[in-house]
Length: 222
Image 1 (cartoon, rainbow, N blue to C red):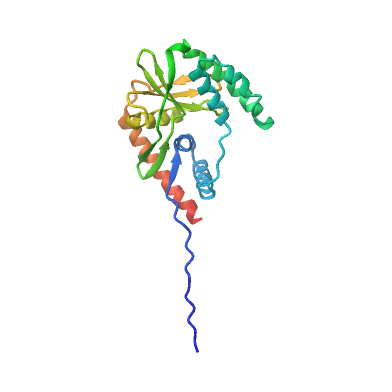
Image 2: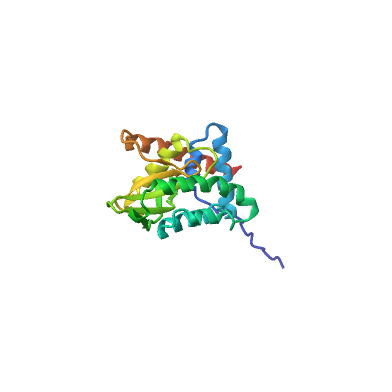
């Protein structure tokens, strides 16, 4: 008697192209082959569902100092709470974080505001737009704040991409707020330039997203 054995097809799950705002802003600053290498790394991390945020405790400390109006005491203490391997990072970033905290002015005049993440469609690419927190000033101003932790300052491309994506979805993130990128190591605040044309940025980002998507597919086939 002949027995027919069914052939089971093994197909690799299709992982659609995706990036966080941080990943996409880092991607647009790269040139040449470095772009494809970077996208390949993002895809592999996505496949493994890997990722670790070493800055979580510092963000919590900064938010606590804003919320409780403690003038930097949480930022001063957080260095002693992290593992030894992270102490140099926290020491390097916390001083700039205090500079930024001082730049907010009278602690009684600013408070935290709840923000929401947004999923942006940039050409064929989905990008998660995720500020770290929001601020509400006593004079009525609101800000959606994204923090930059890298050793090198953010490039003009990274600043433009980050602020534009937040501004584009501010109705979801924090209505009537201004997008802000804070270079935390230097305590420097970046805002959208008034002369910037959103339509030009849209065209630029759409082209970058199309190339990102093509590279994502190419690394899957490799």
